[in-house]
Length: 262
Image (tube, rainbow, N blue to C red):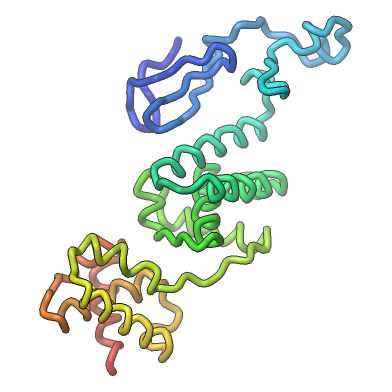
């Protein structure tokens, strides 16, 4: 029985690709593999291996762009995970409006992780999303964890756990995110003036140089700088407003603000 809606986003805007035996969600890009639209009968691996006729040896496969594209029932578990993870990367990249080269970098990272069996016993979606997160930082397109997980049900802790595995096992050369690069985006969400943005940049620079919030994530420094700058420039924003915009909790801003004394 073919699905009537997307299991990821619930959309009914589905496209059936008979050539690839797939059902694709046009809204989120999820590839839904469904045996109900298979065009070829099942052929056992032993029969295919010893087949003399070309059409029997490739039964269940389709040549697309010069490559053999296997039907879902011919894929191994690893291949299915690879295909699913790649589709999630494509969907997330589209929602984040990432350039093609960043998307390709994320897919390379994910493939390396799969080749090294890093995802065995772990969550495939977390690894695909953390690959996107890593690629953004590598190419100086910093995204916060909240911006990545807001499009999925993946928890922050799971994403960070997968991200740490990728960094360690693949020896990724990931630069430290500069909080100043994040300030304009969140200042725009808070509708702050340019003078307040400039003040927040100055505060973030001093906080980093003097190590006032040493060990804290860039988002914490950004939230603290924006909160203090808005108060100094008489454009006060509540801790809740800043926390919701940046993706941290109010108590983090409150505790961090107490440590920042110039």
